[in-house]
Amino acid sequence: MQPNPKPVLSNPVHFLAFGFGSGLAPKAPGTFGTLAAVPLFLLLSSLSLSEYIFVIIFASVVGIYFCGQTAKDLQVHDHPGIVWDEFVGFWITMIAVPVSWWSLVLGFALFRLFDIWKPWPIKWVDKHVHGGFGIMLDDVLAGFLALGSLHLLIYLIS
Image (cartoon, rainbow, N blue to C red; front, side, top):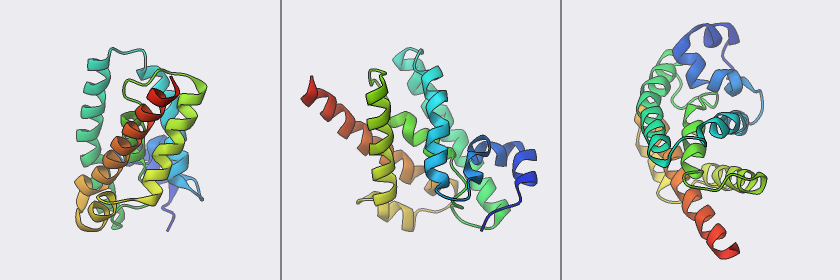
């Protein structure tokens, strides 16, 4: 169910929930949303670790509202086009990761893997926690699983 792009792009809350329009991709909107998060991550990567974590916490809290309100307005829980949660999940994946082309690719792949696969407890959260909090929480958890996996791989490689 693809929403009309005009109301999505003209409503600031929907615009943000749809990842600046990246969630309007007709196929794989979550992947396109994660791709749209990469340039913003590159800008955020110049922040100190504490500033970066503050941005993630802030983006998560406002994301609960953005995602919940957009889902309510569209009358679809966790509409595939809502991708603000993918932005935050990817940014979590990249916490304290040295920025390089391979860390971006690996972080992207790991986050998408956990977000699509949804191992426990992500699958449970996805099915049982609703509203904006539920929309955000499954991707936050996927981000933390990807973060741990990425740091483990970096440790093993170096």
